[in-house]
Image (cartoon, rainbow, N blue to C red; front, side):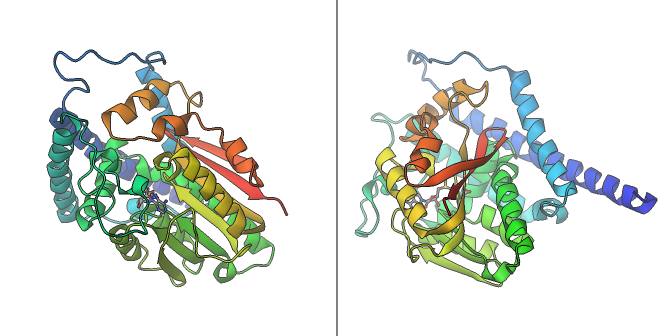
Length: 360
Ligand SMILES: C[S@@+](CC[C@H](N)C(=O)[O-])C[C@H]1O[C@@H](n2cnc3c(N)ncnc32)[C@H](O)[C@@H]1O
């Protein structure tokens, strides 16, 4: 390696470390403020519910947290994907402050709901028959569930605060699996533009924006059931040359049989009732080409790490009706039954990316 290459690689490392540390510091401060607003997980006088898992060690959590960023830096240095845009670009202080203010306001609303008699859960009564009942719940006790601009505006900050600044880095464990597949297809003679991918339940487009930052010509369709979230995704993928946005459910996708090279989902399956997970899995197997790849990213599951206690307590504090059953779900069996066979896996702090290939 030449002196110039060594210098450039040192600079890259320093840039990554400085930017990720600043991000973690910022969101950790809001995590502390958020905890203060929400208060203890049990009300005074309430008996804490028993847990099955032992206490997790703070040292283990710190190690897993640091490992996530070390692995991402190694992937960037190996050329798997670019230095993330969020670490290349100068943060916009006005945006950060506006988002933080909206987060704190929403944290107060969430706190009120979470301690309300009867549990604070709501199912939105709207006239849109296309939206399944399970979907109309106010997951995480958030105002309007998935169904308003206000919810879409505050969502990214809520997730980053929950994971103290690690959310995007965790999502990019899925980008690592996707990037390796895109590179493999290109080496096989395909062009970026003729590789067809669907990012299902794209939300505000966090993975999508990293995907198109790396592969701007990829033929990507972003799918979600929430119009306000899709609108955010549209904005976050502004540089994409070949992107489409579609309002549709994961369990009934608007793609022809065997038409996609890849399909991704991030943090979708823990929001789905077990029966709907099976319907979505069947649908993914239907729309993928033979040999196509499904990249799945969601929470770690019971037994993946020494942090099972967090998986047990999280759904109690935030309205997450299907999370516990997701953490016990056998993913290899769920997807294997529909012909999607387990291939790769990457753990990243509290998330796990797994890939499943449709038999050729
Ligand atoms: C936890 S968010 C994850 C969003 C995004 N993938 C991310 O990384 O933040 C769940 C998203 O799934 C969408 N969603 C939930 N159930 C869905 C379904 N059955 N079909 C399509 N989208 C769904 C919601 O509208 C929401 O945008």
